[in-house]
Image (tube, rainbow, N blue to C red; front, side, top):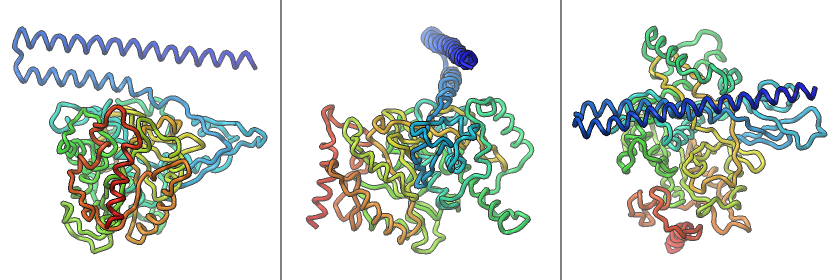
Length: 519
């Protein structure tokens, strides 16, 4: 038995080394080719005065090489195993799950994500967790889509992770709005692990997309189709249409309502362009603009509110619940007090590094069912945080390069928009700059949410200041006349001095609170 185990371990080590060598060989080949291409383009432009058209072709070729490199680089990110304790509860966007082992005498036993598919000894509601996690919309790097606005870039690999994390959080808000928190995808448990050929073959995905584009017509934009059978079957069909419609809004084409092309276009008004890195607060404002300007009828019943200076102004949120969409750039068509609001709150949980005292606060936030997650991550590497276990955060990782999917077809494949493998990260590694999201269905719902969150926000003996605050009235009542980009300091341009600390940051909130007391 020991020999077999040793042999198995040696085989695993050999496979890892083989993959690592293959990665290095292909990476070296791509690097050399890309270097030669760049040099040839340079010398040609100097010696032969290459024309503008030829220069554009070189840029396209460079983009293709970078796409190939990114596809290779980011296809390995999610193939590592994640271990979960069998004895500690797991929280996922307000829901609690327990993993238990048959042998209750093993208090420190753990399992990894691969065991979710094969280990019969794991009891409790593991399948419920798997189904719930895999039902969340997963939006990752994509390649081979149409060039982004103002550029020749055809992939967001290496720079679009915060945009993708923001898309995932917004998608969760839309799932709550249309389907509710208890909804799960019927095919969630059939997803294959990420290291199988069916999940990584871009050729197969392109073939499926091309066949569907050839034999099927345009996807209906509104869920009006009739499903024969009883009420239960009809309800299930309607929910699946909503599910597919929500994902289609995030497709990677210029015409989609919430796709990366639209977000990059809106980011250009803030000085951002394709290839730039976007911070969590910038993405919050871009998402707000995208929803406000969306023309799809399905998005007319929802607004997005972004907090100012870590402060949620209740009158502004209530106004967003009742304001007609023509005030926000869309058509009217709904009565007062009928719109849901997604509340986005950019915060900073510390100075240069995360303040460990905020971990209990983050746990409390992710334990609420109306929380739609957190746009966060490590420095310069964004994740979408959805839960926690013990002292580790559970997240969905956008750093996985997948091929373009044409969402305009009536039955486009959904598998690449759902992730079967959760990831974990120690809280202490979290970047302090993040954006927290909540979903409020109505004014009454907001009043309950603000009351509950006010209790969660009560500073502990270790914390000097809450992460954010609620205030009565409108933001305009407090003379916040500074432009948005400057109000959102230090999130957007991060112009703080090298010696800035948490005290420099909370001073801004204290000043706002003092002005409120004076009034």
